Length: 144
Image (tube, rainbow, N blue to C red; front, side, top):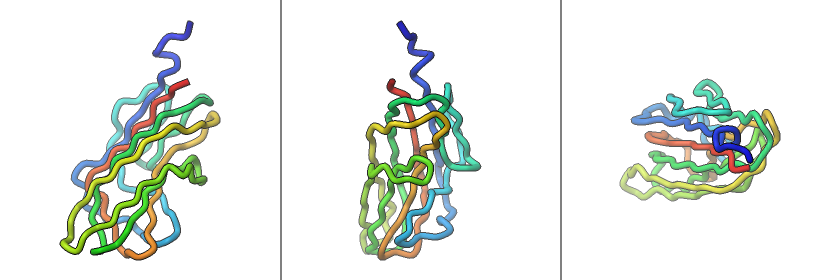
């Protein structure tokens, strides 16, 4: 029997009180570069430099993400989980109101990774021109 410590690899990246706008926000998905802090990490490698979590072993991973952000008024934004540079199609969509609100949106799901692949969040919008991530968390947990 495998113990929890040998297969339940896990990591969290987050930002709290962010105020730096993403460099480019348009219809082309681009990696969210806002993460400033590493949380607990076991069996995987998280990086605030590359803004991703790299898995050490192949398997199924649970991904949970929550993003609070501001941006261009009345614009619709998408955030998607990527493995390396490929979309997993785990996506959230949020439309900001006309009052300059900071909105929160979350997503979660299972992905299958090969050893050495990196999990990250990408953002895009077809109708906005600014996005500032204020608070966000990306958590990855190996399930099998």
